[in-house]
Image (cartoon, rainbow, N blue to C red; front, side, top):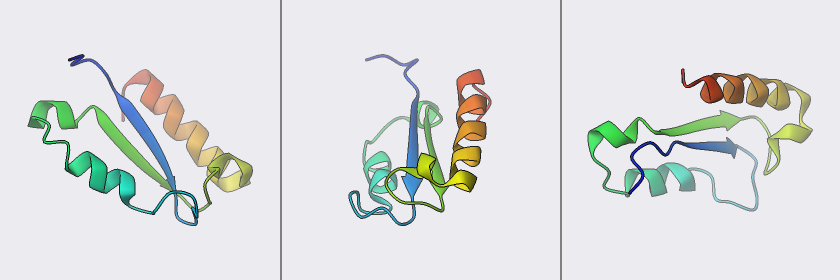
Length: 73
């Protein structure tokens, strides 16, 4: 209902809590119109369920989120 809603998903390759690629599967099965698919962002990290505890993943997460907050991703 909110066409302005944007979603950011951070996925860790070594996540044992959430199956890897589950978010991509879920996003692809939402049957969204093409113009709303651009509101969905998925980024991948070389970490587990909490990418912010790995220093290199934390730096990438911070950069990705900063761009996403500005709306340029």
